[in-house]
Length: 499
Image 1: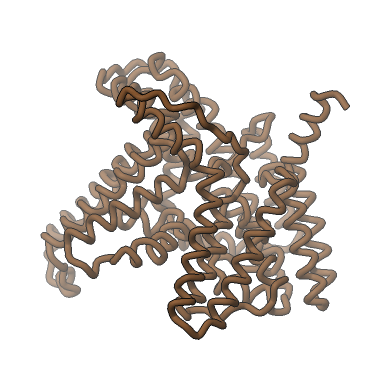
Image 2 (image 1 turned 135 degrees about the vertical axis):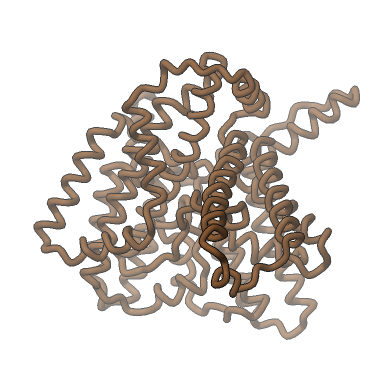
């Protein structure tokens, strides 16, 4: 077979993994029909979901099926061993083995070459010339997500917060369940395992809401995120010297909207896909740019990751139980490691470090300010309430710009590229031939829609579910046609696929 043909077939196979392709829609439809036909045969249905998930994962690189299977099996066995061990020392040894195994595999694939390169650069600065060492391993897609999910199961069993799960098949399906396999959300075992065991009941209203969520997720991704990325963000970050300070600033704001629409759009599709199969996922985004400080931002952004870091990293480090200074250090360490989790690049470390400093600074400010009594608002004058509302708007704007500044380092390919954009911003040049009206209109829609009250969104989902089937089909068709008009010819990968 010619090399070009093989590459084309491989690319088309990858389409099954990408939520924004027709191949995934066909795959989901087949699994949907087959799973509900087997709804009364729980074990057969579970086998179907597991095999479908492994098929889904194999479309990226079938070699890594062994990795996810071996990782899942080892954690299930270690969880059972910890639950059955009477000696606390033995339990701790097995826990350490679990953590070393999971982080070792993650480190080998994701950080080995990065670590060696940084060490080599340091030695060269000291006048030494070490030999070049690089594994150049292909990064298994979704490894950061399924590693954290599986490891959290063993930790929960060790903490006696969760009993060891007796069903090997259910555990394999929990780790590999395809809606959350590639880019989350990070679903806790206590949330998903009981649902895989229970007999599913088809809910037409839930299915209708799920279809609308999937479609709106595609609107976010294709009509807003991809459009902003391809028409401004990518161009500015590829060649910042060709753009004015104003255009660079708008590109940063556009990236903040792009990454939100891209990742929350993916999450909407993941949650909707699971709901079609009778499984409910927790919420992963809650209008993060409505946050009034960075602490509030991390309660709203990638909730499954931020709570995972809190429960399995920040609290074990001591949380806020060991004094003020140690609390700040724990926040900084947690966010530095959270940044490194995103990828082997100094830009992610800087991004995490900046968020750690912002979190520590916010906490310090709140401690200095002291608690605000619940009865204050009752006795405030109209002028005081007005000043409070103005400060609320100002704090939201300040938080948005602080987060957007951090996104600069998240998006830049290197620290040098990030500094170049900062230099362009410092010129305060205002020419803007690249900010055409259509681009600004899409950016405005992305910004304004983010501030729509959540109650309106929930009301729209409920209202859609109550429509007759033909009316629902018409709405979905209109949304699909609008996405088709805005979408690019080639499917753009989701941002979080690289993690």
